[in-house]
Image (tube, rainbow, N blue to C red; front, side):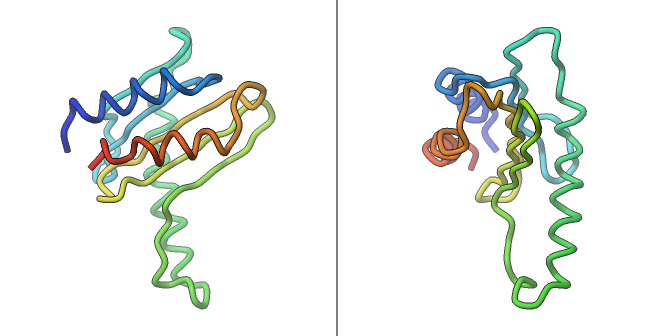
Length: 124
């Protein structure tokens, strides 16, 4: 895990993605925040983002009980709420979880996925 590259990932995504509310990069091992950026100083989503580690663990455990999914891996999650969408991406090395919160009016799902895929090499 290279902290400089992780920060570059956050800076690149925050610079490209209009409507970004916050981006948090979390250690999958212990749930600690590795990097954080918010477009608004009054918003702090770090604690909420740390819970994404547990969400991924529980969903993974649940998939083990569904036929034909027991050997599958989760690569990302998306939760759509009124006004905002939360994205959780697992790094290829499975060491990091990226939690992005975006404003629904200014950002579309395809752009978030595109920018993540384009820059995810910085996370490994």
